[in-house]
Structures are given as C-alpha cells and as structure tokens.
Image (cartoon, rainbow, N blue to C red; front, top):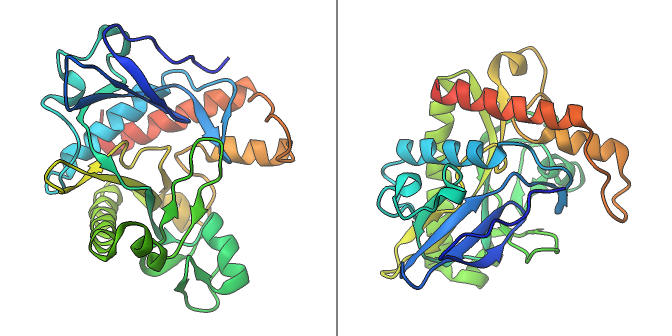
Length: 289
C-alpha cells in the first residue's frame, strides 16, 4: 500500500497532495510543516507501492539546493528540517516553512527538447507558445532555456500547459514576469552546478508563493528527482538520452503496461528498487554525500 498520511501530534493536516502533505498548528502561527512522503506519482496518478525512503531523499536534496541558491528567497523557517519544532514522527522528511500565498502556476523551465515538449514540438514546432527552430530531434539541447508554465490543477485533475500570456491573465503582468525571470535564473545557476558534477539538468519545475510583504518566494521542493529531469553527461554524449536520474523508470514501465484507463497497476519490486537506486545515485553525484 502507498504510505498513509502520517498523524502528527499537535499539527492538523490541511492539505494532502500527490507526494507532499501540509500541516499547520495554532501554536506555531505563520508556519507550516511540509512533509514529503514515499508516494510516487506518474501521469497524474499516485501509484502503488511507494518508494521506500523517498521522502527523506527528496527533503535532503531540496535542502542541499536551497543552500546553493542563497540569493533566492525561500520558504524555510529558522532551521528548516532541523528545527526543534519538527515532531519526531516526520523528522528527516519534513521542513518547517513560512506560510505563503501560493501562485497557481508550475514554473517549468526546459533546457532540452524532451517529454511533453518534444510531443508538442512535433505538431507545432513550438512549446507552450514558444517558437523553436526547425529540425530539432528528441533530446536536443535548446538554443537557450525556455519558460513553459503550467496551470497547477487540483488533485485528481490534469495540469495544463499554458502560455506566458495566460499567466499574465492569472496573476498579473508584474508577478508573471518575476516568476519567469526567477525561474530562468535558478535554472541557469543550477545547470552550471550540475554540469560540474557530470550531470545535465534537462528540465525542472518550480513553485512560488508571496510572503506577507509580497516578496515572491521559492517554495515546496526544488530541483529534486521528482520535479526535475537529470541525465548523466557522459551517457548523453554517447547518444543515450533516456537514462535519467528520476522516476522515468516508473513512467516507462507504466507506459508499457497500462492503457491509461482505470486504476494503474502496481509497480513490480524491481522497478521500485531501480528507482530508489537512481534517486540515491543522483544525491551522491550532486552533493558528494
């Protein structure tokens, strides 16, 4: 069974997403607990079983990236995952954060033509309204990273790729521009860091919120195996554009064994084990830990 939502003494569950759960407490005003579970999702479905230890791995990687991005405001409160207010039941996979007014947009940045971007390019020679050169192939590096936002759908619905102009309609021109520019800035910084470790950051998605003063703030996870597509630079140079350090193993197996109707089948043990190994290898390659 997928790992259940944890009961946390003194904290109330206020939101449960595909992977993360959010808790609040009247004794800790203005703060929240973001708890990463071992659940794994693909194609907008939560799958069975989860990936053992995944919640701790995602939290560890997010925290490492927050440390690399000190010039970008983030939602961590005080000591983040080490704060004494974090209950033992979720220690290691929880972050104490400042509460934000979240933007209903997933800020996607693509440096390479892959996934849904490749599928759209074949039909329109563009991705989310961004025109691209003719003659590109699957997995090609783009002339420069592109910002391709998505509307963040409620649980149970499909996220929807949208144009930048649509984000202006949703959040206003000033916020939309800031979200785009911050996303591209973080992607550029992270790409350089990853490249020094022999890793390619192909694409990723960010989420932002506004604090009480209106400052746009990086939130949720950042540059994890769930939110990003990473490739081994040496394998890519040899022509392998499919071996990624994320849940692509899960996506590939599901695509080959499910017709997208009804309940997805349970993941076999070997897929769970290989996915866990790839998550751990990425953390070791990036952080050296």
